[in-house]
Image 1 (cartoon, rainbow, N blue to C red):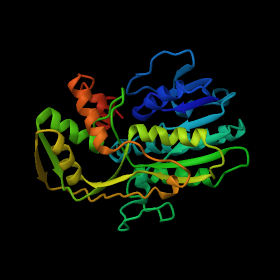
Image 2 (tube, helix red, strand yellow):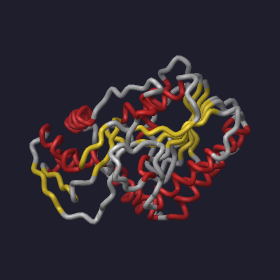
Image 3 (cartoon, rainbow, N blue to C red):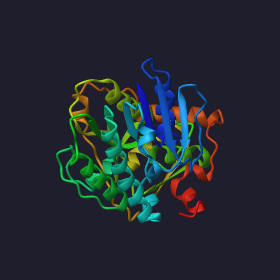
Image 4 (spheres, rainbow, N blue to C red):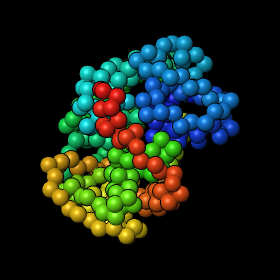
Length: 315
């Protein structure tokens, strides 16, 4: 199989590419990434990396491609707000262009990384794919619109899977320290203190290894119906998350007021019914982060923080 992976140099993409390279059925991987945050992929005869904007992807990039995994986007709420026009171009227009090119090339599978945050703030404890979408930010809205464009333009040649991930946690060579588990764990390790803003907000979580396993599940398994699938397995309040970290790292917890009322849950029963089973937990992610930190595999820089680095790039 030949793969095109957009955002393959990113936090999740780096781990996904490294995993796919080792699969027997993998013939070739083409990564398209503008490399704003660098490139942490090792050279491999199966791997071709194209440093380019996903808006510039053309039909030639999809020649002989069997599976497209579309990860590239302007990530998270504050990142998208830095430049809403760029977010619309990247998250909506580029996504729909890539989808149409994939259909023209008769790509067998198109897998799109959306976001579990498209539901908005829900009171329901089981946030399933059947609930209405009430996005509350530019980022959420761009993901919703991209989803709608894709699902409204299906054809019989290309299988389409839209994944709505929870907040991803755990170690990657392209490390992010601005997602909840990673951020709070790093605070505990570096400062011996966790700052909790509010604390009652719920965040769904998924280990990065399980996130990658979700994508490979849809790549490898036959006869899964087109559609939208949640991917998240631990709905935890920020305060409970901090407490889990404190059990493993000697630190204090300081609770501060917050105007951020965003609270997300996910129910992934639909994904589980396809045969997927998670293997990794938030606690495993914390343990791995502690290990990597102690081995000096996590070196903090502005590139670990999406908004901070995008501001330096003057977006």
